[in-house]
Image (cartoon, rainbow, N blue to C red; front, side):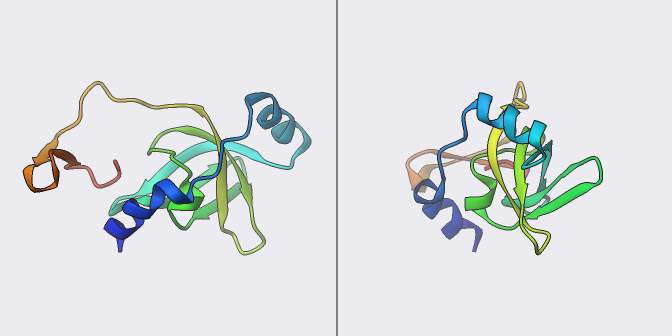
Length: 116
């Protein structure tokens, strides 16, 4: 479930690739740059597209800390899934709506399920 994915996510993330390597991979066609769109029901999966290339991002490990709207670089697998290998630009919002969860030590739970 999504909560279990969130708890395990800190152990799943790979290090982002250096910006110079991201640029080289995109230029060589080994990777693509696009905008990550998370699923409406969960920030731990979504999709990304660049020109005619699109990939489903299936889990927290493949999302690799990207948030809905981030410009990312991704690689695509043969089965139309992919994984994000770096974040080019973050799409930060000025404010977020949600609730503080007192039973969890004051963690913030956003109303928009696309935000982790």
